[in-house]
Image (cartoon, rainbow, N blue to C red):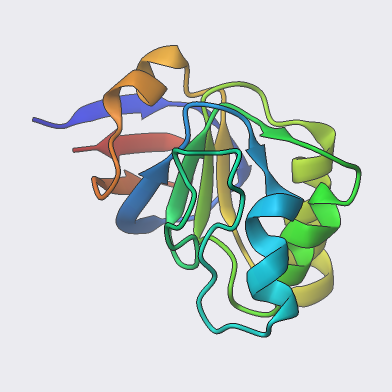
Length: 147
């Protein structure tokens, strides 16, 4: 059974694919740094402090999360992995997006023409519903269908 959720599009777009889910904040630096520095073509989450995402592929996935956490480099990490084509395809936030993540996806779009479809404000029910591997469909108006 699928469910429909409505959020606010930050980087609008249309996309369908699988997701990975973190029910805690995602540290973008810790998650992407190891793979990005090694020049990997597909980045596996290297943040051992996030058992939801650790050792799972992040490249090309919709990452469902409440928020990002960590240092001020987080936005530039998102911009860098998006520019290199190894970032997530989408970021789906249950909460409001934080300024660092917003800066990262906006700069990736403006500087690199690299869209990371981003929707925030999907709500707590969204994060309770989605599971790893579930297909999500994102519409430009911020509608997300999961399941």
